[in-house]
Image (cartoon, rainbow, N blue to C red; front, side, top):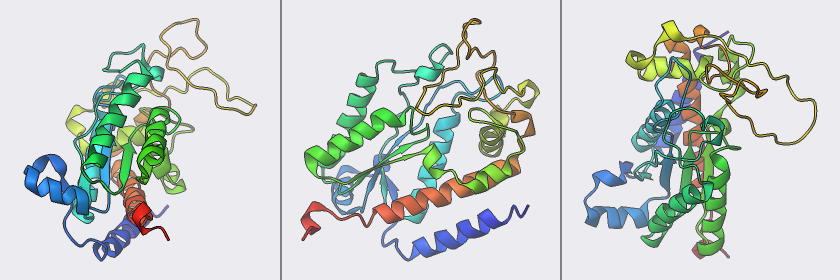
Length: 280
């Protein structure tokens, strides 16, 4: 396996994006208000990032794993493209992890309304395009975020894009993994934390856990759950799915390079999405 190729492609992509960048990116909270007022109207897009600040990731990972990936992706965006990144949303709707400690906003309508109001404040002050970055998955936290994006588009005409973790995954990430299956606090997520914050990873507590539920052989979306009830078919003692014991920091570095390349590609492409004022 050629594990240098994803990074090679990443650097080529970043180089091509440099030509696109006219002014440096910035974090909105770092700017004084007069500069923020101008940049909100001139930036090709505003990123509103969401990542769980405290959501269980097995017995071996810190609960901030999603937030750390969110921070990394936003840092790379600001370094590479002329985007503005709004202050992050760290608390959200996590029904699959509700029985474990964390900081969930259990009412999905409250979470959805909160994100909507924050995004609308950016639109009122001139945001031309809104990107909702979601370091959860599309069919979980991405569901209320997608409704927000649709409402913003419908009510204001502002183009909106939702980018979730699974939108950024590619077969190249799968090729890094040695585990037979995964999905949460697994080999890849653990590898990423080993790269970003190794001091908070407790590999001596990492265990393989593939659950006991059989793969379904019928169509449809069936929400999953990490249950702590022994009689539940989705009972989990660990809160993970996969084999984090196979994780390495090098795999995390390569996985992050792929996720970053995909995220930057999404931003660069969406920055060209036509605006209402440009419509013929």
